[in-house]
Image (cartoon, rainbow, N blue to C red):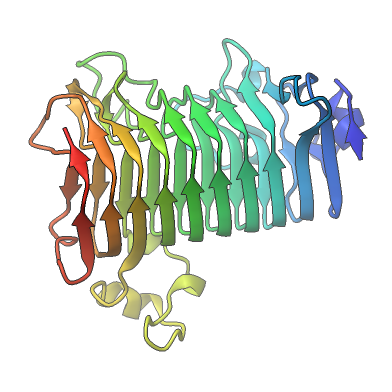
Length: 329
């Protein structure tokens, strides 16, 4: 389906909830140079499979833009779970592709999320720019997701937040101007909490060749990875030797055995400013395994004793977690 429309009802159809609805087994191709304003509603692909939303047409024209532009969708600082708060929502969906798009909030507005994946199995976000939102993208309890060659900027919290997922690759992407709730050194962390990229309770992470610039804001980190076991779905709790499922009780009682596996390589980070609660470039929390190598972390003087790479005391076991050939300045 090719959609050179400016009316989202014509492009996607209207669902029963008032959101714009998509169908399974469908490619929605928006003409380059076109702008689709979706007001206060979401593009809702819940329960759908094999869906693509992408630009098509003259490569000299800008990517098609999907713009959220209504006060009723404004982000107020709270974690909103409802689909109406996400500009584009995929929930309990599979085989999803977003490619060659601009996802934006109109001036003076901000969605809670530009894009939300919840329980998505297999997805690709490629060559897409996110501008605005409380969070640029929240990726929750989803598996086999690739976020490639994309940009997230001007988020009020994290640029990209990933939780309870498995098999996530983030590569060749740019994350800038996170944590826009931060104003100056008097802004408390409880108000201004936002990282370029955060992983929580997520296994099989491959994070490489990304650029993160937190130099314009204080507080938090370029990258934070934490093994918060309460966020690991039961279906992802497996024995590393037998690959058999284990109970939540067993998983929580033996964190040393169930380390999150992490590859963080060839990234460039400009650390947060130090006049707020300036953080480390990279923050690694508890019970991880894998490699952190060939990363460059520069600028911003140290604050609160944090360094270019900060290790939680439960992630320092050298037989599991290897950090080498990184440049910190």
